[in-house]
Image (cartoon, rainbow, N blue to C red; front, side, top):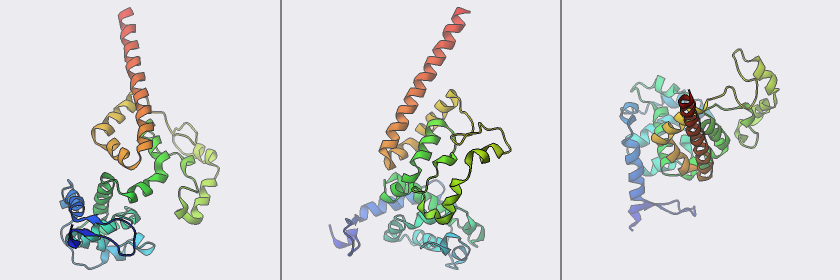
Amino acid sequence: MTAHAQISDPVSEAPPVPREKLEEIFDDIRNHAVYDHEIHGCLNCGICTATCPSAHYYDYSPREIVQLLWTENLEGIYDAMQEKIWACAQCYTCAARCPFENSPGGLVMIMREIAIKHGMESAKEVLRPFSRVLLKVVSTGNQLAPNMITRDAFPDWGPNVSRIDAPLMVLRKAIPMPTMHTIDTAWEVNLKASVELYTIWEATGVLDQLETVDENLFDVVSDVMDEKREEWEDWLEEQEDEEDDD
C-alpha cells in the first residue's frame, strides 16, 4: 500500500486508516437520505460558529464541519468524527443563522449515525455512559429516569451535577401531570406496546446499531424482548382459550 493510500498520525501509535475506508465513510455520509437537504454551499462567513454555544467551550466549529464536507476533505472528516462531532449540542442555532440555509447540526447528526454504523471507538465512548438509559428506553418503552444520572457517568457537567442530589421523589410528585410518583419510571408501557416498539427498532436497524456500539447491552435487550414476546404470545393464547370456552 502506498503512502498516499492511508493516513496516520506520526506521533500516535494508532494504526493508519486505509484510503478505501475513508472513501467508504464519506460515501455513507454523502448518500444519507437527508444529506443534500443539509448542505448547499459555504461562504465561509463564520456566522454559524460565532453563534454556536458549543464553539465557546469546546474545540468545535460548525463552519469547519461544513467546509470539510463541502471540500470532501476525507482525512479531516474522519478526524472530526473522532471527537469534534460529539461536542455539538444540537440546538440548530447554526441552521437558523446560515445565509446558505445549511444545517451543520443536521450534518453532525448524519456523521454521528455513520460513526455508529462503522463502530468507531468515539461513538462507543460517548454512548457508554448512556447504557442504562438505552436499556431503559429499549426494554421498557419508557423515558430517562432521574436516578440514572450519576456523577461518574457525566463528569463534564461540573458543579451542575450536584443538582442530581435534589429530593427527586418530592420533585416527582410536584410534576403537574399524572405519574407513578417514582424516580424509576413515569408511566407504565403495556406489553403490546413494548413488543411493537421492539419490532420497529428491529426493522429500522436501531438494534443493529446498538449491537455495533455495545454488544453486551444488545444481548441484554435481546433477552428482555424475547421474554416479552413470549409473554405476549402466551397472553394471546390465553385470550383465544377464553373465547373458545365462552
